[in-house]
Image (cartoon, rainbow, N blue to C red):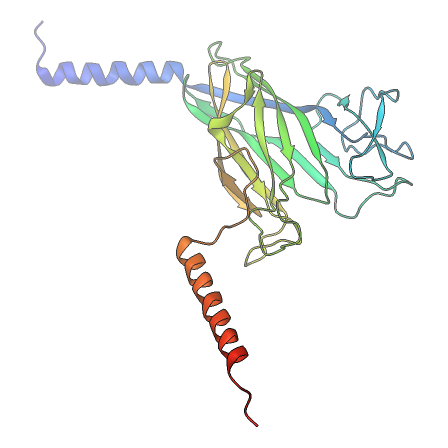
Length: 284
């Protein structure tokens, strides 16, 4: 039987649709925070933990060193605790000598995305990361585990095991107006190092707010693709958050060359006027 060109085109469309329907399948996400590493001890001073998540292991015998700058507080050189299975939020804060908690703690959370239809190789949302930029904290690395679950073997049991690195950015703490440079931030790190292509997520300080006062808590959606499970981008920033391509602190704003030239010209005029007044006889 000889088919017409239109019939052949219809068969191609049907075959393509059938192939797509075979490969697309529902994917669920299982995600949790697995560990917490910091220069500060999660059990500092009075022994009260600083974590929302339940610590499975606490090592109290780590060496302690005096903090640089003459601060009388003593910190462990490094401290890592494992978090109980299923932990999705961690709170960390700096305390004083008697273990009094600060009023504005830091907080990181991961919320898994709702199940969705996914094709192999397709980029899709795996969850939402939220960060509250609280009182000063020098550094933290929080383990992050994300795994797919699907009835389709091609989409099932793909995982990402890495960490969320929280960094302090305070190039000019005495200039509250420099809210962009003073925003603390986080980025993702995999087994081979930082995921530089994704950039970083920055959250404003509570005391260094831009116009509109969006606050010191923000969230972003995390997207990835299967093969294994590869994070690809941060998207849809909301709240007091903005995205950056850099993993380094943002330097304070530098005046444009024209602005600098105008400033120098103004200073020259002021100096010239002062010189003229100095050499002119006083009027009596």
